[in-house]
Each structure stands twice: as structure tokens, then as C-alpha cells.
Length: 608
Image (cartoon, rainbow, N blue to C red; front, side):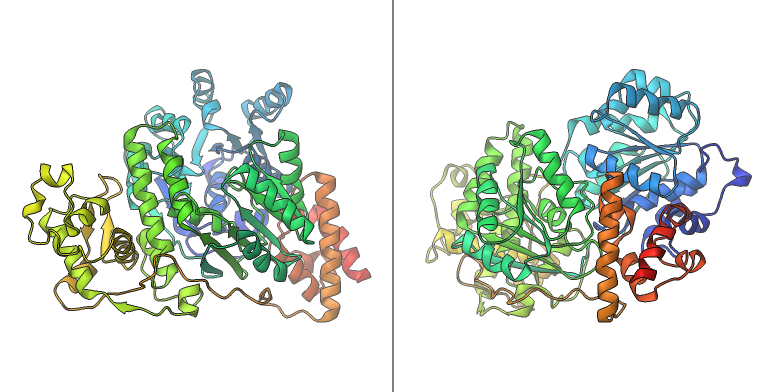
């Protein structure tokens, strides 16, 4: 694809979609983002993992011509996306620290010669004065910032090197900026808009729901037994197991291997070559479990991960959402299973207190953790709570542990009304600890300082211990009666739903134990459903096509899905095209892949 097309010669977005990427129609949410960018508007797109965010800037890049610069935080992500684009016939390059100086120079010479349409770079490499000066001489038509939540000081994954990107709009006022993320609540979205955009901009939130992922939270008692109980019926499927420490990561991987489950370990303490080899095996092979710390995952585009299992509590709802979003990216059924114990909370608190950040950041992270603990302690549909956190409403999902096994609840309306009366009496400024101290009639410095011993509710809740009140408040938060002010100082605010309970127009029910009850694990892995029914003969052909794909992937040193995704292979096995013209009609087959792979796969189909 030429990088210097004149405006009158520009291909349409539909032609690019079909000829380059092999699809007849856009996925939901993609086209409005593409249209906004083509209209010259800087755009923030918040789309769930697996919704096709990359296409939202790749299609405009190829329609506009010129040079699109993609800012990405991870080398692995750049490498995979550049490999996929090249296989699709797009002139793409990356300049990063994993390549030799000679390789980077070679790529840059192609860029300056106008031979590159899309260039991937890390933020720190792009934002050097020398690079910015060089880029100012090039026909840059678009900046695309992947993982854009990293720029927000309110986000859970703020990266200082991303903060420099806020000057792009000033330096290049006529170049639109595409900011892409799967993880941004309302506060983070507003901050991204303020940081990145200096004028005309649009924001699209395409829904956070991943309805194909079944969600379960289980009380932790014997994590190894619980892990094995979950993984064994899913033997042979791809999965990710997250652990909080490096030691536990290696212990869990060894444990799974000893019990007949093929597992690899991944954490920052491993030798870089070992990490890379394990990562390459995971994205290329089938039937592997990656046991990892959070060092693994961002930018790993493996569509057929069938489950994500957390042996420990993640850091926040945003982190949890991003991590479980690595399952089921192909849209097929997947599972997210998390273990939750009281010890996790104390450990997470210590991590926050010792992370070396300023007090404001520590305060925000403690508040985020409070929200997540409330989610883990939920009494109603988990998906509703998860989506509501990101500002999205939904009906009960019937695909989480609480929907599938409703809890035994007690009427806690009077407790809730007492809590909200206390919150109102103290001005909706204080967090859970202070509210509980007032309820229980404690004699603390803060209570004396604000004269809260004079409140009508002071001491009215002393019949319940602190842990019970903590559980009630968490469940009020997860039920949507209360909201934590994360951007402020963690004060509890009463929501509209809470006011209905406070006024006696609705009731609040709660679970009396403080941790979630054990849910019954699946007895067998759920069968992956597709829109195409395969006969036993077709299944045999599909297996052969997957072997062929793996061979080609290893030859080209790319993940297997970059050759063709599973859905394309399933369609090939069912339809069995006999010519290149028929092969071209299969979803996911663009012109470049037709030229490269059609004859090879047609031969395998004829032999099958």
C-alpha cells in the first residue's frame, strides 16, 4: 500500500477492509471511530478487548495515505502487529529496543523514503527532541496511541513516559490523534481527553461487556486444590493463571506439570531469553497454560485463550477487567475464575503502601482496591457491577456465579438506612473507616476533630463489630447504593438507588458472611460453539489445517493466529473451497494472504 496516495486516489474504507483484511463488514463500534478520524477529529475509543481496536486506526491510516505513527508500550505488541500487517501486504515497520541499530536504521530509511504507511514506536523513543524534529519533516497524517489509559494520572497503569505525549497536539495541531484503550472509567476518560486533545475531539465508548466470559469468584481455602479442580476438566485448552508473586508462579507451574497439565512460567525475574521463549511457545502452540505475574499479558493477542484463573486478588477492577479480557477474544465461551481471601487484602494494602509513589497516588489506589473488594464481596450479578463501574447499565447476565447460584440473603434495610444517615450527617466527605467509627461510637482523633460524637447516629451501630460493618458497606457499594469518590479523598456518596432505600422506597438485602461463598466449579469444560456445524470429517480436516498453520507460523516466526484465525480455518474446513476465487470469499482472507497461502491451503483441503 503506497504511503503517498493523493486525496483523489484514496481507496474507500470498505475497499481497504475487504482487500487488505479480508472482511466484508466492520464489527460493532468500529465504523464510527474510523469515520471520525477520517473527518479529521482526534478521537478517544474505549472498546473491550477483542473488539478490533487496531483496525480503527489501521484502516484510516491506509485510506489517508502519508505516515501513521503508532505509539505502543510493548515490544511484543509492536512485533505481532507489524508481522500481521506485513502478511496482509501493508508497508509497516517498528523501531524499538529489541532490534539492532542496523535494523532500526534500515526501517527509518524506508520511512524517510516514503515507503512506510504505518510505523510503530515506543513513547520514549518518539518523544526525543531529535526524533520529533525529524518527524516534523515527514507527511504524518495520524498519531495512534495504544493503551491510552497509561497517560492518565487517575488510571491504574500510569506511565511517566506517556505523559510527554500530551505535547503532540501542540506540536502537530493539524494531525488527528487516535487514543485507544479497553480500560478507562469515566474519570480516566476525562483525564485522557484533557491530556491529549487540544480542540476538536470525539469520544466513543463501545461497551465494556464481554458476554462470552463466564465470571466466578470463589473463597480461597486451598488454592492448589482449587486450581487443579478448575484446570483438570479443561486439559488441552489454552489458559492463563495469574499469581501475585514470582515464587508462587513457579510453584503453580511445577504443580500443574506434576499433575499432567502442560504449563509454563512467566515473571520478570526469569532470564529474558526464557521469558521470550515461553511467550513464543504460548502464542504459537495449543493446549498450554501460562502461569504468570501481571508482567505477562498486555499486547498478547492470542484469541483462543479459554480461561483466566486468578489465584490471588488483582490490584483493581481495571486490572481485573484487562486480565480477564485476555480470555475468549475470539468471541467463543471462556471462563474467568478468581480466588479471594482476606489475606489478599492485607497483601495488596502493603503493596500500595510500599510502591514508592506519592501519597495522592497511594490514596487513589487504596480507594480502587476498596471498590474491587466490594465487587468480590458482591451479592448481585457480577457483570452488572463490573459494567456499572465503567458507566454502563445491563440486565442480570445469567453467566456469573451469583446469577447461576443465588445467595441466601438477609434484610439489611435498617442497617443500610443507618449507614446512609451517618454519611449524610458527616457531609458525604468521609470513607468507610470513619463512618464505621461513628456508627460504633469510637473515640478517635478524627471524631473529636470534626465533633462527630454529636451526630444523631453516633454509637447507634455498636451492636455490630467492625468486620460486619465493613462487609455491609462493601455490599452496599457493590449493590450500587454507595459510590466511592476515587478522584477525591475516598468519601462515600449516596447514589440515587441508595436514596430510594434511605427513603423507604426500596430494600437492601445482604449476605451475612464476610467472604463470598464457594461456588460449584464446572465438572467439564464447556464445548466451544461456533456458527458453523462441522462433521467428523470436517473436524479431521480442521486439525490438519491447524497443523499446517502452525508449520507456516514457525517458518515465519509469528504467532499462528497471524496466519489465519481459528474462525477462518473453521470456515475453510466446512466450505472446502476448491479454487482461489472461492478461497477469496472466506472471511479473513485479504489479497496478500490469498497470494501467499491460498495454494498451500487448497492443496491441504484437496488432500483432506
